[in-house]
Image (cartoon, rainbow, N blue to C red; front, side, top):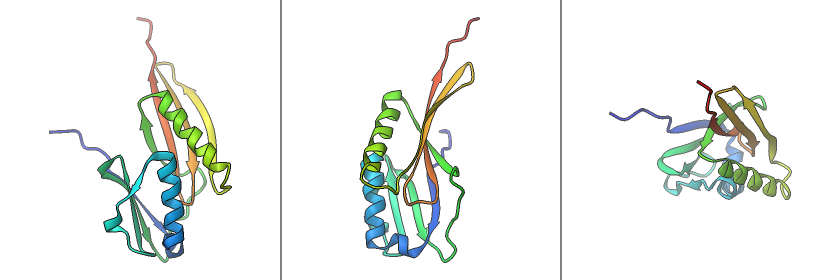
Length: 144
């Protein structure tokens, strides 16, 4: 038996945010920065947008609702990367996008040192009510 894993996050949004232009903007950012792509067979104008996240069974599910999610700035979902290079690449892409679109919100990279583990992360938000936190864990050798 394999280890269960998270496979999606569901977020409610205003219908207007999921119209043709809204979906285009969302897909352009998350595609350009993270490589996410639309599951077009699931798209429904002003109702639903599903973005695949690296595997068919991992996705961000955006659904229209009359009472959409409202979240404080630091509410987020996390995405782990294997290397600092990947983290830095995502951050560079987000910053490049922010140069031509002021709707991008970035919280700069920081390192939390817990002794045995160093956690490096940054946050980015674009049009969704939740930020994405990109994290890299570094296991630090401990003296016996």
